[in-house]
Image (tube, rainbow, N blue to C red):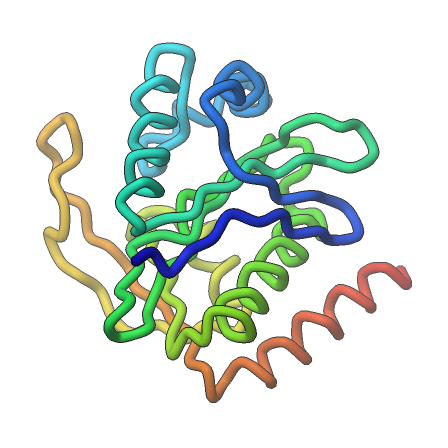
Amino acid sequence: MSWFTELVLETELVQLRPLRAADKTQLVAAAADGRLWELWYTQVPSAETVDAYVDYALSEQAAGRALPFVVVEKTSGEVIGTTRLCNADTANKRLEIGYTWYASRVQRSAINSQCKLALLAHAFEQLGAIAVEFRTHWHNQASRAAIARLGAKQDGVLRSHRLDPDGALRDTVVFSILDSEWPTVRKSLQFKLARRAAD
């Protein structure tokens, strides 16, 4: 039985709604803002890879291991990125928030913090997760800094963790937030968002 049930999450700025095959064109348009697929240390779809990207996400959802979302900007109604609850370990009540990226124009805004707050609240308060992980490429310095700003702690580095399509070995940095840490992380995120809104 799957741990996940499809739902829509709302924040002030965005709506996170379930990913559909029909979203492929909008995802490519969002990724084109910054040509994000050219970043060698991330997995962002291009027109050539979006079919496989979305098909894999939906197959993981069908297997009960993931719940993929598109991120829709409320003011424009446009898809501006995607994120996912993934790698669910239902027996041990652990999951990961990953496959997150946003169009360049909304990066370094409040959107990522709002999305993470909504996803973390769902994971800890509705799903009863014991731990939520974040994983990123060793060379993705911006992602590592963003994860640390959320309040996640670095667990370690998985050396030669994965083979990239070109055969290069990836070192993966693993962070996590525990259920016991969630109240403090939530307070910190809410404070930062309130300060940003006041500026």
